Image 1 (tube, rainbow, N blue to C red):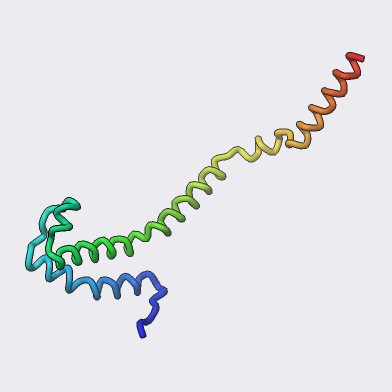
Image 2 (cartoon, one colour):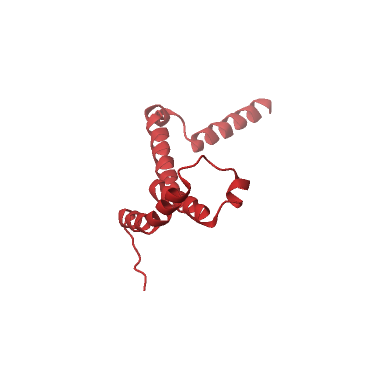
Amino acid sequence: MIPILVDPAERLIAAHAAASPFIAAAREKYGEGPPMTVDEWVHAPVDVQLASLLTLALAWLVTDPVGTHRAAMSAASSDVAGAYDWTRQAGEPSHAELARRRDWNRRAREQGAA
């Protein structure tokens, strides 16, 4: 049975330990090499393809794009709310007050026309 690693650091350590031999073997056999196009990658040896996929997987584990996006959106939301002038907004009439004024003005116009 494979243990489920909840802690992101443990997950990264385990993934790195599993991926490192494949990546090291490909680097030893083929060297560092320049970035590849999709066509070059498709025609590359299987161990190079595996090493590149494992490298991308490790990068994904490090960056956690979903968590990073969530944190960025939360920070942006807090910044927007913090930058808003809530004191000025408190002095503005509410929607209900504006509707009441509109209805009062309409009734006053109707009575003046009659």
